[in-house]
Image (cartoon, rainbow, N blue to C red; front, side, top):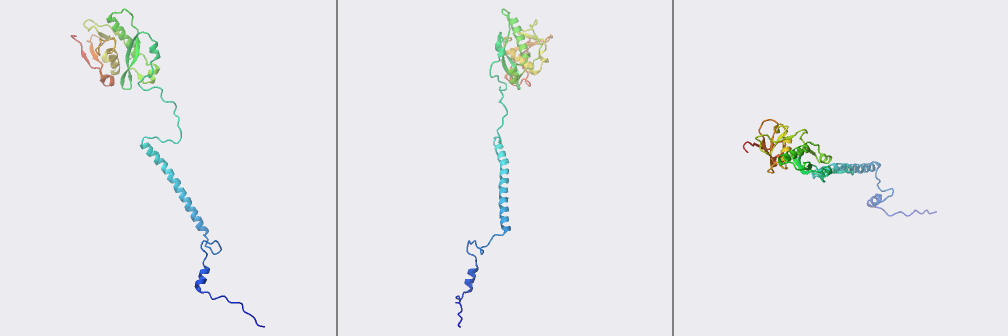
Length: 253
């Protein structure tokens, strides 16, 4: 019996064998190269580090933005805030007439009160009997003005920042022999008053029927000392604490 041999494959070169042993490009079979577990874990860690760096950058950027806004005069805020209603009255300004002053009946006048570091006027009224002589009328007006200066400011005036340095109990007397006829003698000597109180009295009197209307007023004390003529200047109204009303002797007037 004759045995046949199976047909033999054609001879393959070394190059063909190497080409067959390489994995197919992009293949997913057993021949394809697989990523090791360590490599996969390393990639995930790098991705997590990148996410942490981005988050940290955002946290740093928020304070930096707040500083930039503050430097531009803009206040940064994260949530709405509510500090209550705005102040109801502007400092040193009365938005509406005082009801108490309106209800009073008498001679309309203005008195100088303190607000901040300056003098400001507010409306008042004083009562003067009808038929009073000029000298008596002048004294009564001056006394009414003093009483208004010594009275506490109204609630609306206090809210706006008004105050007074004139104390109660000061009275106004008539001129003495040898005094000018428009002299007002105070029960407290003018040089014993504080600079604020003296400025309030001088500016209030000089701008009222208690004076001659020339922007000055003649004041004296309870003693025998001669009276002096005081003036209310712009400097006194602006800085009553450091600028005393200028004065001069009235002898010979």
